[in-house]
Length: 205
Image (cartoon, rainbow, N blue to C red; front, top):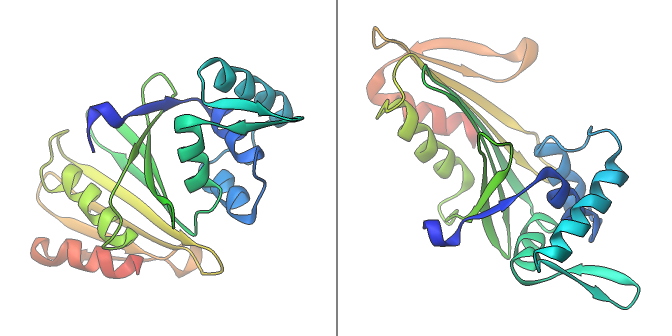
């Protein structure tokens, strides 16, 4: 992942790209990315189409508007995705929200920046989404570059499968806490630092 490959997209533009190919994967991507409940969605989609056209990421095709250039690459992944990650980190310095969509056309990591735009870049998921979730979590909890306490929440979604969620927290006193499951089925336990990420990974598979 390099800075040269980064692309910024707004919620409007993501909604527009998803609307251009309304598949089951598109609907799932919209829900995982927290775009499903946005009010006045049709208005936002039209606004997104306008800016995509202006940016060269959409173009007319007969009576339709279709994705183009980098917009086509993003749409190809998001509208055919079969698995997703929803990632959140809470640290003393800042909170971070990321999403990953994986499909036969590749995988994309979207991270929300401080201005509310999504930074989009390709990411390697060849070793599985759970593996990527652990790598991202290590960057914030093991290295603790944003300070302690630090907590991670990762949810692994897949078509026709039950979503799996795991929380991992590292406190200032070096206590590691793992929570698996959701709702009444959630279980919390203190875990050894040496095996924290292994247990975290197992909870996401």
